[in-house]
Length: 140
Length: 327
Image (cartoon, rainbow over all chains, first blue to last red):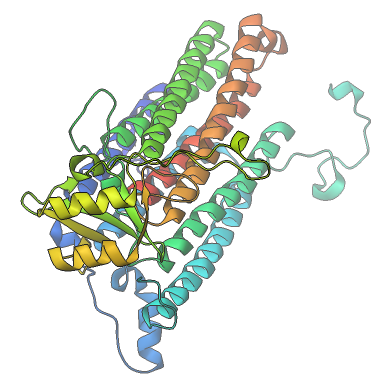
C-alpha cells in the first residue's frame, strides 16, 4: 500500500495507483523541462579523467558516470531507472510477488543488459577512436 | 480441480512436486518470462543504438532539432512537447489498466469493462501519434545536401542564424530531366522519386543568395553543429555535394547519419508494433469481459496477465523516450 519505503501511506490500492501516477508525471515533467532548457551547469562532466598508471585507469572505470557522462544525461538515466522501478513494482505488482520470482526476473535482465551495454558501448567507443585518429577518413 | 490430483505422498517436501513455491500461476509466470526475453530484445536494440551513436559521437543528430513538431501548430519549434504528451498518454493508459486489474480483484465487471475501454483508447491515441511522428519524420522539413562521403550539409541564414529550407533559396532551372519509370525501359528498374530541387538548383540558389551558409554534421565543443564561413560553404557544396536529400528513409536522412533514421524506424517501429498488438489483445479481453467469461471463471487473472504485457510496453517506452529523445 505504500511507496517511497513507506514514507507515504495510502488508504486503498486505488489511491496508491493515483499516487504513483502523480509521481511518474512529475518525474517526466522534470525530464522534459531539463531537456528543453539544458542548464549549462549540467552540460560539462563533473570530473576530468585521471592520468597515470593502473590506479588512474581503475579510478576512471569506477567513476566513469561522473567523468565521461554529462550530469544532465546522468540525471536522465537515473530518473528513467526510478520510473522503471515504480512501473514494475507498483503497476506490474512486482512488490507483491515472492522474492524468488522477483529475483528471477530482475537479476537476469539486469545482469545481461549491463553486460550487453558494456560490450557494445566499449566497441563503439573503440571504432570512434579509429575514425578520430585518422586511420579512416570520413570527412569528404 | 484438487480432487483430480492424486496424492503422491510428497506433500510438504520442497522437491516432491505439487507445490507452488513462487505462488504464481503458470500463465502469469510465463508472461513474466516472456517479458524478460522481450526486454532483452529491446535492450539489444537500444544498446545497438548506443553502439552506433558512440561510433559517430562527433556527428550524431541532435534530437531536439529533429523532433520539433506538434500537430496543428505550424511555424514553431517545440522540441519534446509532443513526445512528452505521448509518454503521458501511455502512462495514463497504464494507470487505467492497473485500475482494471484492481477492479477485477474485487470482481466488479462494470468497472473492469470501463477501465479496459479507456486503456484501449489510450493505446490507440499513442499508436496514432506515433504514425504522425513517423510521417513528419519521413516528410522532412528543411532538406539538405549529402556529400560523396555520406555527410549531411544543412543550410543556415547568416543574418538570423535560423535554419534555411531548400525552398527558401534554391533557384529553379528549366530542365528536361524526367523521372525514369520501370515501364520505359526493357530491363532497367525505375528510379526513386525526384527531390523537389536538384543539386545544380541548390548551388545556383546559394550563389544568388549571399546569406546562405552551410552547417556540417560535426559537433563542436559546445555540442552545436559546426557552421562554415561563406567561402568554405560554397567550396564544400561544389566539390563534395552529391545529391539533395529531403526527409528521411532507410538510405538517406536529411537530419544527419542515416543510422539515426534506421534506428528510429526500427526501435519505435518495433515498440509501436508491441503497442498495436497490445491494443488487439486488450480488445479481445475487453469482449471476453463483456461476455462474462471471467465472471463465470470467478477470477479476472486474464486481465492481470494482459495488464503485465501492457505495462511492459509502457516500461519500454520510458527507456526509448530517454535514449532517443533526451540523452
